[in-house]
Length: 221
Image 1: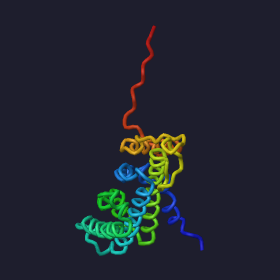
Image 2 (image 1 turned 135 degrees about the vertical axis):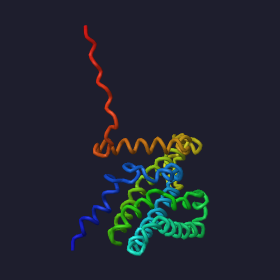
Image 3 (image 1 turned 135 degrees about the horizontal axis):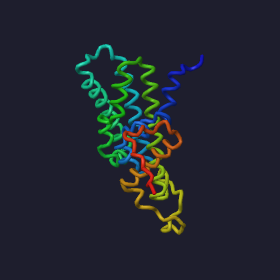
Image 4 (image 1 turned 60 degrees about the horizontal axis):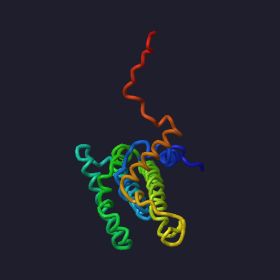
């Protein structure tokens, strides 16, 4: 049986066309902070995607039993509980990466992407559709984080996942690491360049102008 086109669209659209970072500018704090290396970017991407999918499933399942007046509190408690489990798992099995991620895993609780999808979609849709939407947005978020993390690590240290790709000058090679890539401003400019590239390829993503510049009158002779 063919897959439901709505579910397929929910999975595919957030990768590029409706990417939560490049289109909606959601979750950019972690995109700037944890992408100094590919392994931290991957870990953050997987962690957020797992929290997003599970929280959407839970919120969607109990949506008819959540009073509207406390829905945000309930959603935050659900997300925070999942984040604690993920954080403890990372500390137990990936301690080094957990230390490098610092507080940013815990801050998934306040990530606007997670709360945005649970509030705008999972709260009013059935579990399967909510999970598909959450997974699609998680993959779209992950795609941006992995892209930026790979670029920063490759040109900042000449490695990917700790494996030497470019032989540096210190090792007798040709590549001089760009230390700027390991600083926060590089992530900001890379993200800005990625948003510009996507919106250049997909002009419909560009926002309409808020104001129209005045026309310049031609000087009369």
